[in-house]
Amino acid sequence: MHLFNNKSYIPQLAIDCVIFGYQEKELKVLISKLNFKGDIYSLPSGFILQTEGIDEAAHRILKERTGISNIFLEHYKNFGQADRTNKAILENIIDKNKEYFVGDLMLSDADFEWITGRFVSLGYYALVDINKVTPTKTELDESMEWYNIHEIPIMMMDHNGMIEKALESLRLNLDTNIIVLNLLPETFTMKEVQDLYETIFEKEYARNNFQKKILELNVLERLEKKFTGASNKAPYLYRFKK
Amino acid sequence: MHLFNNKSYIPQLAIDCVIFGYQEKELKVLISKLNFKGDIYSLPSGFILQTEGIDEAAHRILKERTGISNIFLEHYKNFGQADRTNKAILENIIDKNKEYFVGDLMLSDADFEWITGRFVSLGYYALVDINKVTPTKTELDESMEWYNIHEIPIMMMDHNGMIEKALESLRLNLDTNIIVLNLLPETFTMKEVQDLYETIFEKEYARNNFQKKILELNVLERLEKKFTGASNKAPYLYRFKK
DNA sequence: ACAAAAGTGTTGATCGTACACCCATGT
DNA sequence: ACATGGGTGTACGATCAACACTTTTGT
Image 1 (tube, chains in turn brown, purple, blue, red):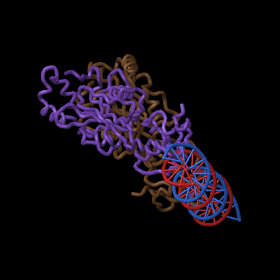
Image 2 (tube, protein in one colour):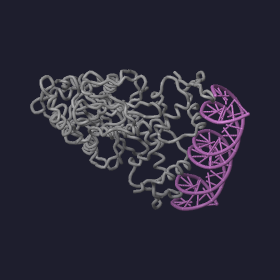
Image 3 (cartoon, protein in one colour):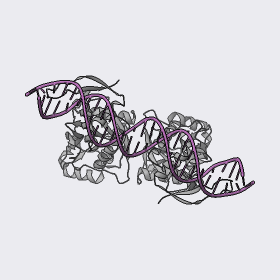
Image 4 (tube, rainbow over the protein chains, first blue to last red):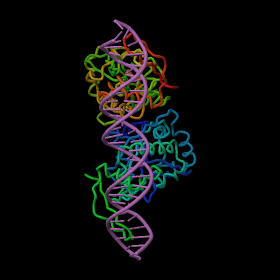
């Protein structure tokens, strides 16, 4: 197994991505369960090629895991405590999974050094239209699935904390920005936008004032009405202005 | 010369600090002129020991250059483009300064690799009371001096851009925070705070409203008056509440 | 006609800004 | 007394939230 080597990747530097999706009034995060014994959950992560920029690397990693490019992506925090190492956990994994690490999968000393060493992680969060994503496993993943933000399992290292911080950053950014539209399909109703805000901030907004606030940003264009068959006035569809 | 080696430092990862000071209505940045021919200007920089966290490393570097601990310090951005390398510049330096790199100062191959390789930089900015700082040179610095934010020389790599981004981040943070008090001495008058804001944002504020805004934050305590000898009402001194 | 949900309008409070005035200090 | 600059109070306008009302849709 020669997954890693510091000729091609920058050593001791990782990228961890908190990928947010939204569906049916639930905010979700894409999480990998590693293909080892012991129920190890991890954020989609990767390393930086010597030949690519850090933002480029994050986009590449996201493309690998979601299948889509042009993702809204933002760095939000670095994680670099000295004791932030995989060593104990990974030795445990390797110990529990000895049968995997034989033959071709045998870890070289260099791989072992690489994998168990100290890492500084660049934390990115991404906002995606969940319908466009095809969660994609790598050979290290047993599964790659969406988890409700309130039902995140206990994850490896400080990944739980990374998700919390990402959510905080997302909320802060929303005060001035409407990046959150990246979580919705191309067209949407005002109620869908409001539901989304209410889900993210976990509080309710007055319908009329919310509409006013969003429309006054002048970033949406009104399209035709959406007839759902419900016995009430049909809402307009909106789209992000280009 | 064995300044660097990746046994003790994390390779390819650097910390660059934009240290802001304030004096006589001027916002200043602490900048090093490197001890080589060719007028190379650089931000105070350093590397991360394998045994320390990234924030710890930034504090250590600042302590080395300013002599003070307990500095207000904040990460604001990473710089990690693929073409962000010292190689061309440093080969040029080394070429122009051959006489330095002999005997003890001879660069080992490892040092050369280290120094000319690609780096990802963690950008921090610091706010310090300029009166408490003793700008301190390392053996690599010809000088370490304060430069007015509007008179920054052309610097190595992307350090000019790093300063610009740091100032932007500082301004953004000030909207909600009053961290800027870190640039002032222990006690100060309201006018001094106002001058500081006006210098940083390059615009003027109404005296009375400014006072109201700051006092309503409830973070200052009023002390005795400051008698300057001027023939006008003596202003109060203020101090940050503990 | 009616219920349900979307859209619009109006009022009142709150916040920031502009203006006016008063107070202290040394000449 | 007066000039100078510090401190405080008031009034106006803009912005935001609460309430009320109208419109549209399918049964």
